Image 1 (cartoon, rainbow, N blue to C red):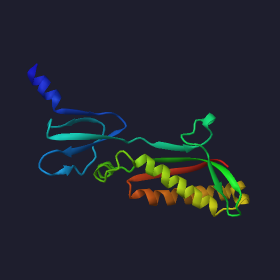
Image 2: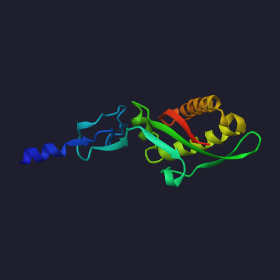
Image 3: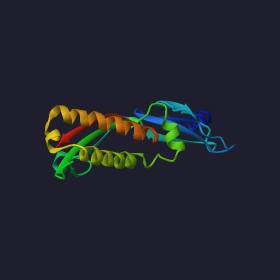
Image 4: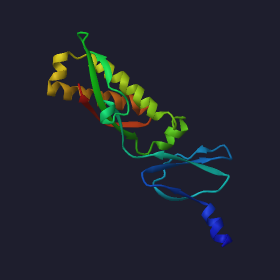
Length: 171
């Protein structure tokens, strides 16, 4: 029983959809430079600690409260100064193999806020370059979504976030 209890203390469970990041507490080695997939990992108690990062695809939504948006629709100005209400969904996740860098850079608790801030800024800039007529045209709106996805993916790459899709859900 003591052997089983001792063995259980040396195992860490990494739940499905989660990325494990190992941190060495002694010896100044810091963060292990690799991500651990879901499963069981060996760990030495008191010498190592673990950070668990959500590795699933996330969706940040700006929309009407009655429709379940995370945040309210955005009031943005078009090129000619018209105020439009814009709803959007940003599909993103932690870049594969970079969760350890996210922890190393101290972004574990703030990466979701950074995604939101970057999305609000990019949406305001991109909508501000468009006319009201362009926002009513499906092809122009799809081009706007593609430009937003590319801009956000490049901008959030330094924060170890991959933007998979941007959808303008309401205009």
